[in-house]
Image (cartoon, rainbow over all chains, first blue to last red; front, side, top):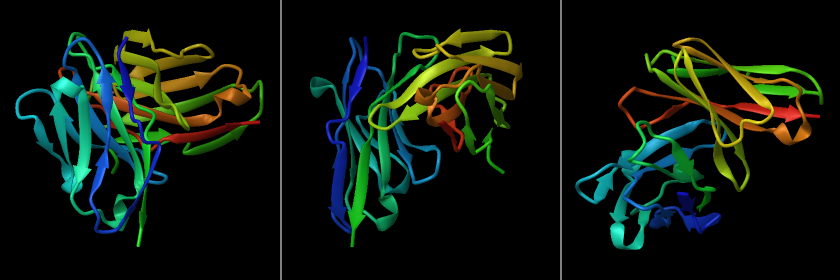
Length: 115
Length: 112
C-alpha cells in the first residue's frame, strides 16, 4: 500500500529565512504528487503538483518543490518565508494506475514563523 | 463566491443524534469526496462519488453514509454520532480527467 511520510510534525522558522518541508512516499511507481497548505480556519489550498516532466516544480506564493525519484521524495521549499506562511502543510500522493486520483495524505507539518 | 461550500461550518451535537453535513460546488465537477481530518493523522477519505449514480466507500466509511443529490451536491450523514467522530470534515471535488482536488472550507464537528 502506498504511504506518505512527513517526518517533521512542527517547524519554527524566522521571517525571512528559508524553509524546507520534507515529504517521502512509498509506492511502486512514480505517483502524482501534491502539496497543499491549510491556513488557520481555512480549507486546503493547492500549492503545486507534479505529474511528470521537469522535476523542479514552481507553485503559488513563491513555493517550489523538487521530485527526486532515487529518494522517493518531494520536498517543498521557499527561499524567504513571510509571516503569512504560518500554516499547516500537507503532502499528498495519488496512484497513477487508478482511473482517478485517490489522494493519500501525510500527517502534515505545522509551520510557525517568528519575527 | 467560493467554488466549494460546506454547511454548517461548525456544529455541536450529542451522542446518538443524526447529523448531516452538506457540500455544494459550482465548479461543474463530476467527482466529489468527503474527508475527515484529525490531528497527527492528516486527511482520511470517508466516501467518494464519481457521478450521481456512483458512490464508493473510502478507507473509514463505518458510521457514515452519503447522498449525491445532484452533480453539485454531496451530503455526509452520521446516523448516530459518537464522540470519536469529533473532527474537521472536508468536502472536495475534481474534474473527470483531473487529479487535482479542490477543497471546501471545512466543517468542525464536536460530538459530546
